[in-house]
Length: 184
Image 1 (tube, rainbow, N blue to C red):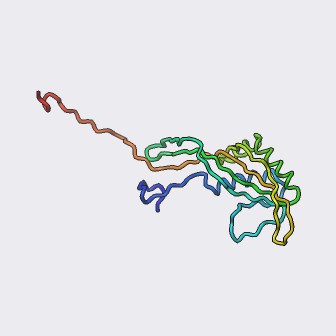
Image 2 (image 1 turned 120 degrees about the vertical axis):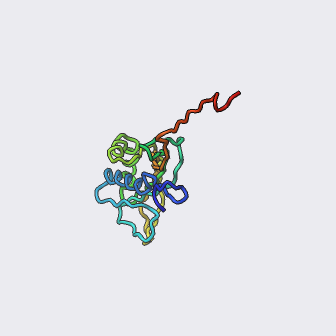
Image 3 (image 1 turned 135 degrees about the horizontal axis):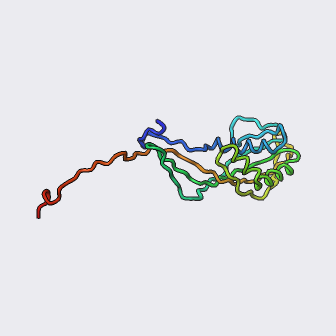
């Protein structure tokens, strides 16, 4: 397949930001506010050992379209489609003091600090709301209880897709004498 080949049957289109970009952006924000050295990983990854306590795990758990698509035309060959999507990401904090750290996450997600961080990062994420924080019983592989606090962070993400677009660059005009061509 060729990106943007112009033939919809054999082309694929790249959406930005990607899921990876969203994880990276939120992960960098968490690193900026949580204690230094705290491991932050994407969840649902096979064959990866959990970091040592304390650590955070991020998992995107939902996407919901929240607006009608918009589009712009760039030059003479491209149309850009934008879609506003509400993305929900579950963040789990493990280890001692995870309750206090979760309070920090929820307080700053609802604050201009997070908005300013994402605006400066260039990732089109706008923090919206958080769920109620929850403590969940968690047993380690050694059958020991560990602190686990979880919250769902919702954000608005502006997704874009660039498509090839044909444009008319000229219009042929043919003049026809009506009375001569179509006599009564």
